[in-house]
Length: 620
Image (cartoon, rainbow, N blue to C red; front, side):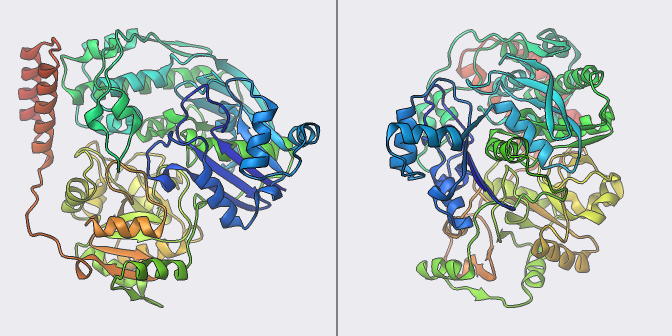
């Protein structure tokens, strides 16, 4: 049995897809990867289907398209002619030689499956958990045109999926968070920025009442009374060939919505804090209602809404259910693997294995392939047969920023020690340097530490195993100095817990760090520069290094010290403290509103800014 699952359906042109990915299951081997990591385009939506990730998976597992026994697509938004499928399978990817209309039609009926959007979300969450039975909740911006639900609740029991509650609507809680993100001036798919910014703000009761008035919790989901008063303009100046994000070009932010009109007089940090508070309250209110429909004490959650690690922390702390699980790819990028697991376990009835599910499912590269790339760039490098982890640990603790490229690429949005940029967790300067100079991210975005799982329990006072950075934990104060650069302003940290058996080489690096500072922890962020997806290949890693995005690049057993391979100009780059950055961002928003001739209460805005300037004394 070989299952190949694609998201999006290559022949469905009824909608603009995003987060394309491919998953392949060959007996007990699994490959799963996002197209964006191979094309470098965030939220990849410029190609017809995930062709590179499909071919990468076939190569990784050493199979041909005609060896695949089952092909899986999401349910399309329109009826597609069998002739179109024939051209795709026979002529384009050569998955079959049944070329006549009748023979292909018979092959198609046996070999091709369609799984609705939310069933794929639910299957990914359940079948990658260790639960033998569980309730499931899927929630996102509204599925797709083949599955127009924005919310589904049900149970997995004895490998049967039972749906108990569902709502067919795009106007839901997830859309509210999209509107909130838009109102702050952040582009589509940047909801994480809203969550990160919220830590610095206050919940404004008058604004909260306005937001709450737009949301209604019912037994079958949450409705959002959304209003968009006019379409936004194309921002052609934001088009960049080498860091293309479609939604930054074809929409302008903030746009004219009821959420923006409610919030324009407030500081962005307070808008974010208030909106996040409302999001959590309403989701937990729904969860309490849903719990009445099941006796199961386990809950698995999936869908784009659960990319919000602060929300996930609130869910776990609520104890509405006893046990929770969030998979490694909650967004639509996880749909290909979810659909493949649905076919494997629910259609083919193949029994599950209950063990930790690895996120390391992407492409890998041998030392020979890596050496060939290094030689093609004519780089100076050193090969380590032994002692690599010790060398890298010492470099990190002396202040070097390290690009760490090992094994198979991670599936999902988080870098989990195979495609990571690493730095000293103790130094606050690590965060400033990586954020402002190397990755050029927004100043307020938090970083995450990777920590040995057993030690992580002491830091978080929690037994929850967060293998994929799914939770923003509250941190035990006595450990603050040791992971200073990884703690957010609200005293939380999106910790990545590392087990020896899951990623031995990375775990060994943590142990080498522990020998020197007493704690097995390292600052870990995704291996990419601002504006492009996490990198996947050695060539991409080398190009980043040569741009000056790190001090040292470690690929496989090879170490490349960047300064020994190129010269940089000595022009100093200015960095800003968090307080300076915060004030600069507030002034920038003030100017944007004035330039766009948007009417807002300037006295109120300036009063809030003055109040904030006096109150945020903890900012450094």
